[in-house]
Length: 111
Image 1 (tube, rainbow, N blue to C red):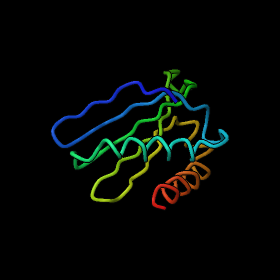
Image 2: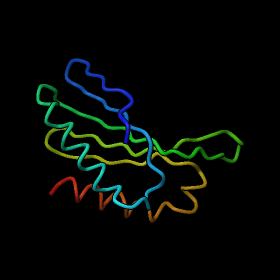
Image 3: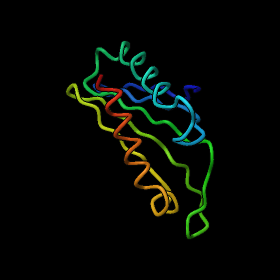
Image 4: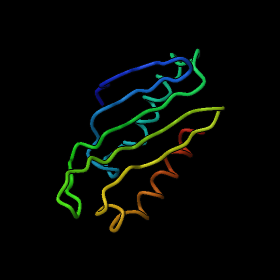
């Protein structure tokens, strides 16, 4: 994945990456975990680090507006928080599988 931005403000660092195909992409959990572990080595002077991983595909919602899904991870106080921002279509059709995938990602990060 290509790093788009890396910003540090006071005690917070945020990194943005592009793009992943979908959560079924082969090796995605491993790729994200490796990126996070590498980035954390350079995040020693901050109290929180966050990552945004953008999905390649844009989807249309019910209002015909384009939505780009993203995986978000935050590491603060030695804990990982994971979230997936999704379109309404993904929520209706894939919310369960996305929740399971996020649990697997978090478990992998906490190893």
